[in-house]
Image 1 (cartoon, rainbow, N blue to C red):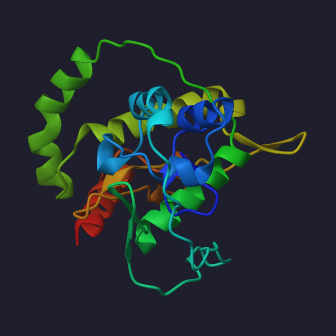
Image 2 (cartoon, rainbow, N blue to C red):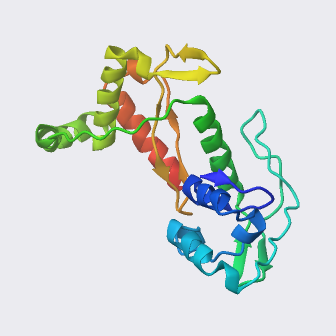
Image 3 (cartoon, helix red, strand yellow):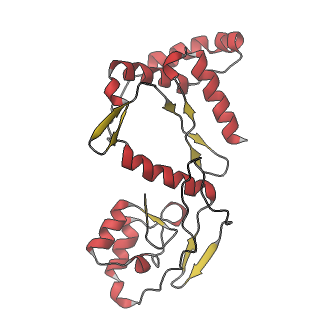
Length: 224
């Protein structure tokens, strides 16, 4: 997602590209009623706006009173509470809470530093499912931890990185930074609906019990 200038609303790159090609200003974009998740503007919404643009004047967006900044300790340098701004044109612009601001900052930072690629491969995991079903009771009895599929997949990822170490790199301008440590991010849903990604550090130095314990603990902490 990309931040809109002079607005607390976030728009997808596709929506922003359509807005740019159609000459739609950010203040006009802010007047579009979104039908997507959490009121976000979709491709359908902006194309419908383009089709009916000449029938109404757009209302200006509410001004932003502060721009959050990501500090060295990974916190947002603003203590303002979540505020709802009412605007014309049957539109609401809702300021993100601290957690969403932090997630947005990290998403933008990740996009700027990490090579992005999407690949889909189907795999038959029947053997994994059968193996887990066979050992989950004894694993719980021996270690006191319930084994889920997540640590099994983490171990598979670690083995893949060991075999293809160039996967574990980032970019700094024209410089490739190859990471020697294997740290695995694990998505965890919060009760608020937000999604965080705690990190299992040095995952390659641990056996299956290590990631299992950390996955369970991180998931538990996220829900507290």
